[in-house]
Length: 225
Ligand code: ADP
Ligand code: ADP
Image (cartoon, rainbow, N blue to C red; front, side, top):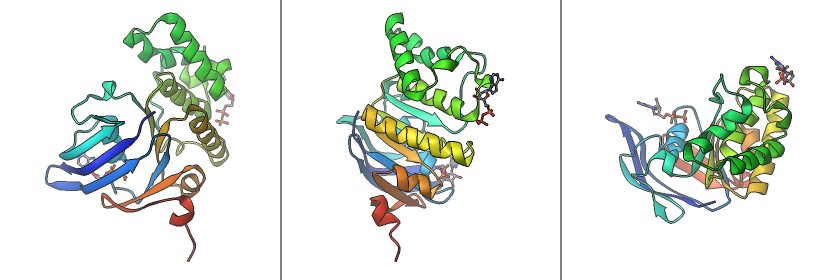
């Protein structure tokens, strides 16, 4: 649980400027959705917050801590991808417990956290299965479960629903929204889908060419003229 603060952020790949100068304040517990055309910098921004991409200049704060040089694993931020990125040879339980085992979390606590997350996500019956024995929606829930067990300060979602069919997308969307209310964690969600943005966001960031065009409530962003 933490605010995210981005100040005078510049990001270049070589001579190519993706983000010319960006300022953004995301409040603690806020659900923010990034929208904008392909190539506008949504993923880059998410990866920067996660610590997976270095910044060219500017400052990034998680809570009141400046994290510019802090490695991804030390940021307490969980990222959920559209391709799930599950370990194919591990059972669901082990996919969820792995990161905690690496950290040396006690077994009993790992077990409690995995079971709590599995209950929240309704995947208790699948804990002994391998990812390939699951449907797309179930795999997406496992990917979220793996993030939840870490008790992160914030969740970052990079188009997590785009591999799901329309019906399942609606279901998982509602579940993520419910989770955000239950966990009271800051969420940043990237999507192409206007319905996702409208139904999930407290506030929407409209990006274009690495610049924020608008940062406002769904009602204001999608208001009809
Ligand atoms: P979005 O997620 O909004 O589709 P991205 O953040 O993936 O956009 O990409 C923003 C811009 O940065 C695009 O023009 C893309 O081609 C470029 N880009 C992304 N990653 C790299 C990279 N590793 N090297 C060079 N250019 C990149
Ligand atoms: P979806 O509705 O996402 O398309 P599927 O049709 O892939 O789901 O799967 C439907 C059900 O069958 C799911 O509950 C899933 O757990 C189960 N299932 C799918 N593949 C396997 C498998 N290889 N072994 C056991 N159960 C499976």
